Image (cartoon, rainbow, N blue to C red):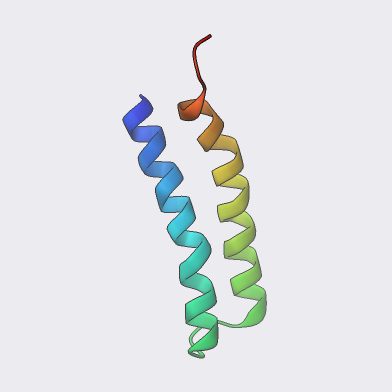
Length: 56
């Protein structure tokens, strides 16, 4: 389960960078970029703590 969650987490980080590059190159509009980055941010904040938690 943790490998799948880590892959989703890294994909969300990629989704945070790709829309900005596409926006700067003129492929995406501003609202589309904002929506994709919002989705990626929420996804990253939800998934990452699940696989990075430490056992005490």
